[in-house]
Amino acid sequence: MRTIQRCIFSAAILLAVALPSGCSKKSTSPQMQPLITNNPGDFTYQGLNVQAKTGLETYAWQSSGDSASVNQTSNVSSGFMTLTIQDAVGIQVYQHSLTDQGTFATTRGNAGTWTIRIDYAHASGRVTFRVQKV
Image 1 (cartoon, rainbow, N blue to C red):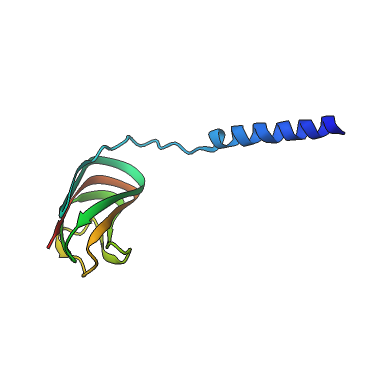
Image 2: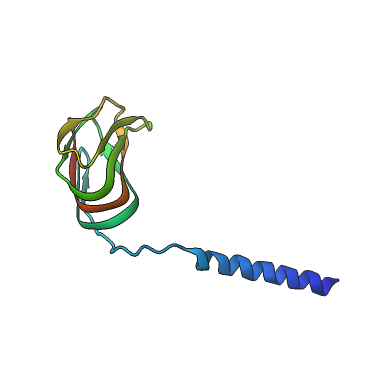
């Protein structure tokens, strides 16, 4: 009986080790290396040559103000890209598709460490935006 238990235990360990490596999903799109400037009160993001990207990028940004100005000049050729900003206590103060071009204001929030999030869904194009404390 112990031999059967050892075999089952050994098989379970092998399966647990092999399963994660065999089921990982790899991206077939090239890796984009965005150019980012993250200074207190001023955040810029530029991603060139985005190709069929799906995923989420999140950045912590220090702002001593309670609102910000967002300038979006992206060129989305396919898919979706969304910019979301949360204030220091996690309240959403901004959300726009990156297909929207222009300068927009966040709603008022709490000073401190804000979260800047870019969501990509099968997106291609160029991503460019700037967030500045008002």
